Image (tube, rainbow over all chains, first blue to last red; front, side):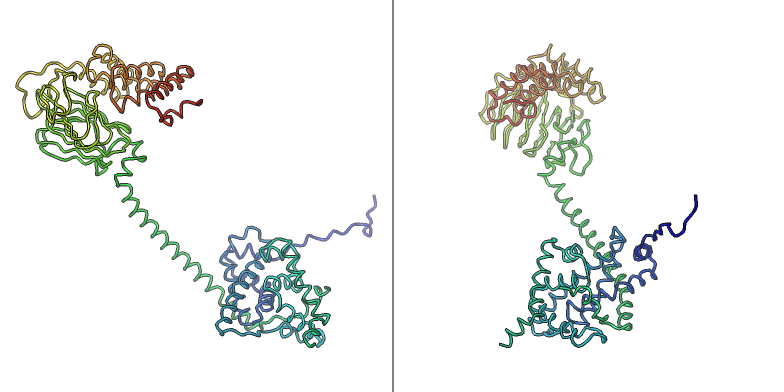
Length: 201
Length: 351
């Protein structure tokens, strides 16, 4: 039998989430592993928090709270591979709590009504048209509930699956779909200019 | 929407590297502080819980209602300080008060002589030979109290009464509740004197009560005459000793002798009842036990043991798997004690 390298099937090694090893090491008290987990996941945590809370300061507070809770309860995480989903749940929970605090402060005239819009969180490389679109999306999301806004951001910005959105929002899949759909509808109308026209009419 | 792929690429991390580092530096110390705070809260909570359990648990467990009911239903009666009420004689110690864990109390005169014959989960039996004893038995308790005197058996569940034993007579005075004296009910404020035709308090006739020529066993004061032999007393003591030493078959022999040879003795009905208990509980002879309980009733056992005898007869037949006899015994019980089916429900499956 002749060996034909060209016809040999090349099997790629299974992709292993590096977070798994880091979680296991962090559980054992490895500080470097904790640091690595923070560096790997902190950017998207603070990104989601800032887009949801419209405040960089509040997002920084939530970022720290998320990792304090995560490292404190790391022994309770049964499946290391689920670290990111678990972190998302902690983040959404703390974001919700922080939103409640923002509303209470605003009710007493102590909070910032405007906050940082989505277009202000865009990178320098983003074109003015794309930035304008983000501004319209931000205005659209300002008109929906926090739950709808969170579900929409998780789905459309963080790229989470519907299952992951439902889990992060602690709701059923149907509810997650409904929330995203409601926000989609509003965003679509804003992007189509309907709302703007009505608003200027 | 079509935004999903490109929206995520439009945003930059809202915090710069320095800010991210500042946030990270705060994580470790806060985790430590959080764990310390939780440990402190846990310690304080545990200490508070333990303190509450100790304070309220002790108060509750020493309350008469607790001591008189379920938890003690499975343990022998103890003294107020928790020491067991052990079998043995009480004499020569002068006037004294014995406080018991279930809230009951016995006040003993200076010349009082008695012995604890049995202290079990469901029964306390004393043999009072001489002197004036005031018994205050906590009502509703799980134990039946029996006071054996040379001339009568006094039975009670919860009440206050005085038993005064002298050489020639026994006087029972009820302050509250009801007692059974030799199978006869004696109510509140009534007094019965046995061994003399004299009425005290004028409430109850004593003519029909058996007068038993039994010596008063006195440790401190010698009797004026040599006491006659007490065959029944000796047999009962023998039975008690055999039961205490784990020889139920010997106890049965002694008890059967009392029931067969001394059926007119005031203690015979109780002996028959005890015989039934030993046959059923210690020896596993349900048919013989049923016969003994029936004999106790025939001999005129007083309440509340009479009702117990009916109930235990049902139990005995049930354990013997004799359904017909069991149902007849249950019917007899219902006829005597209507509306109390709950006591035999465990043993009777049918209506």
